[in-house]
Length: 332
Image (cartoon, rainbow, N blue to C red; front, side, top):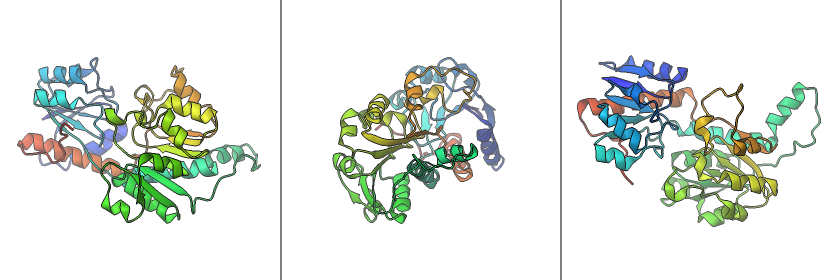
């Protein structure tokens, strides 16, 4: 079986090839550095299935083109599936499967790294010391012990963040339409407005759907404590970036740490160091000293990549064997 693997970087190849070598009947993996779009869909010619990542475009026109090429399945190397038109895939009879949970501690630990770095300004201190500047002005942080952390989305990643921050001695608040029983043993479940009003740090750990796009908007930012920190390691479009910029300019928002960005598809996972970045919103974000951006690396650990590869092949084998796939994405 031939599989076209889009948005394939060296690390994708390394871990997928490692997992493929353990297969009794190895797959023929055709790696494409290009991301999937209507312009690149022809690269799937002759393939039985495709394997995609978070920023690949898998909308109705792309799915229809894939169907005409004889593709039978779309396999995501991630948990989120907001980039896939599930209704169109079902109409065409295409199997869509994802990796629902991979090393949630990896994203949780990166979340805490953003919090710690922003709070104690270690990124700025690092640059100062390298230049021989040992002044402490501008590096004042807060003691996390006793502070309130609001976690939006109390699934596996949110729960892992709660456990870590609980270990710091923080009070934990959670908001989720479907509360986790395990989370309630650590923190207090509240409504979103209460969480925003009471938290010193707000961190997002929920999937992106149309109904929660820009859930952190101008109105919600106005409910937050003055000087609070906002962290997003989930999906970029959960926050309204323009509204966040206004909150930063007015000093309402104390700090912002993001590993995702709503227009990241043209930036992240590429070397743009020699290019002129013409995204004015992103460039404005980068002018703030209290903003820290990483390029969607929260998942990026050996353990997570190995699990992604293993589960991807489990999903592929469901297509090969014609069996029910436990990780199939169903229409909400």
